[in-house]
Length: 43
Image (cartoon, rainbow, N blue to C red; front, side):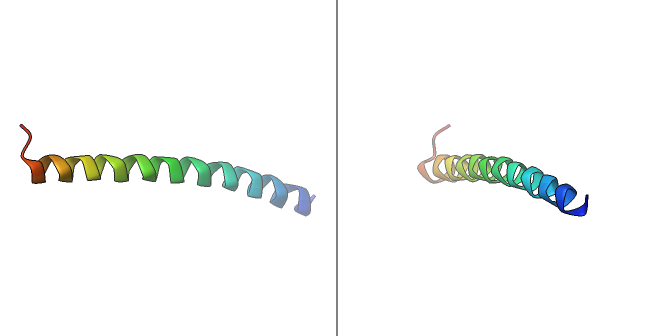
């Protein structure tokens, strides 16, 4: 039972990791865009 539950946890964690990584990439892209806009001076 313990091994099964831990296996399920690891599966869920891997899915969560993928979501977190994708969201982090989106956030970083947004920050880069904001910095570029500030540097270039686009209104």
